[in-house]
Length: 293
Image (cartoon, rainbow, N blue to C red; front, side, top):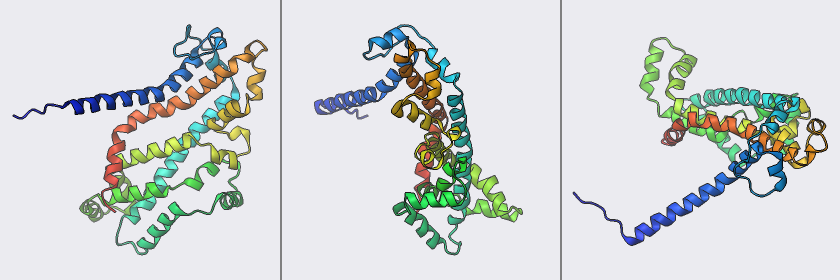
């Protein structure tokens, strides 16, 4: 049996490749470690400054402060609600449109697909979109952050291609048994398409969890701010009034930094926890959806 013996050049390449990948991984991971460490660090260590990768003593002062603040809790709840409702709406509407477009017998199918592809290259712009949202009465509502992007053209094409890979014989047998189109879609097609649905659930949920730009444009009520907009107020513009009032003059120099880091951790960890449960379907869903055009 032939055994491959790596040459000196291949070994040098492997070592260089692994070294570069490890350095890139550390460069990506270090900011997260720093943010996590500062959020748990005591005041004295933060005052000394420098790079903190491990707290001298763990403290939950920053987390107690943000979770005792009503504005932060409200924004976190808005983000969770926005992510759940928005992702469900996106997946259902994308599936309802992709299923008929996957049927070659649909009249006007090519025209509709052309219009879908056209939106990937051209759009009306920010001002016309804002006018549509305003005239439909969606300003200062959660739906203003959901409906304008209810269906992603790219995700629609991928899901359509995935539906086309399902054998027609399965659907025909269901129709012979008396199933309706909606019955075939929700009882057969959707269960067989769980890898693709899991993939798009991840895409849409990450988008809604990081909702920022649409919230700034369409939502003027601070009570409907998602967590990313509140983080903007805390980090870029400055600390919010409620947080400032919750601190005395001694804590003002350091607690804003630890609070910012703690808020970033709370806003990042939930979506990181969701990803491993969907990751096993991620590659399979995208690859299967790209088989057919």
